[in-house]
Length: 239
Image (cartoon, rainbow, N blue to C red; front, side, top):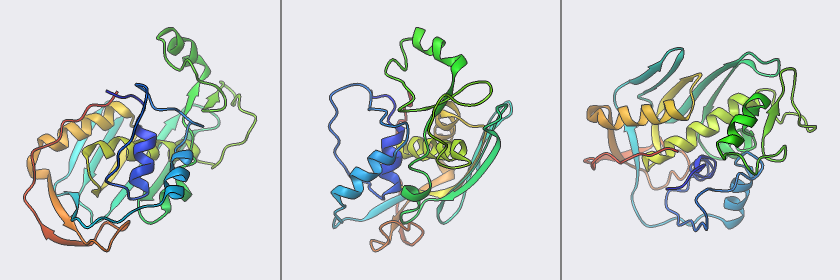
């Protein structure tokens, strides 16, 4: 079992990679600069190889929703992969932010990959006592104080926090095992909500179908050529 896989998985999904071997010599992937930019750059530099095989996607057929207090996440039918994300934090640099994003072509590398993870100074001591974020620094996260942030470098986007939440959603939903065709709406979501939505979706067998994609559509997933019978639901584990 590996931890912190979502940034690499998001970079792969954003680049249209659906078949890859990855070698790792630890139980956790490196955090890099807190975003997926380095992974996206490496994938672009290596290049992609088109294979002579049918490409499949998980097509959403029914709306599925998970609600926990004021946190909510839904997925519903759509002929493409679209995410509408809203976050809200009582912090002067964040407040309420919303960003809508469609995964296609090079949109991930341009609009999402550089958005960094973030945390609050009040959380750092508790995390380190739990033996987490031991290698964390201002080089791989936005660290927020009650009034601002410790980082000297400016934000990469005015809504970088919402964009990073979308990065996490893409990476977590990549654990479904294939490209997704549907519209995701996330309000104050997080990894636990993402995992709960995937679990509920896979258990609701009428809510999805595995379909074949047009082999010419490398990054634009909507072109559907043939319906196929689905396999059994995948097991999903998120750390």
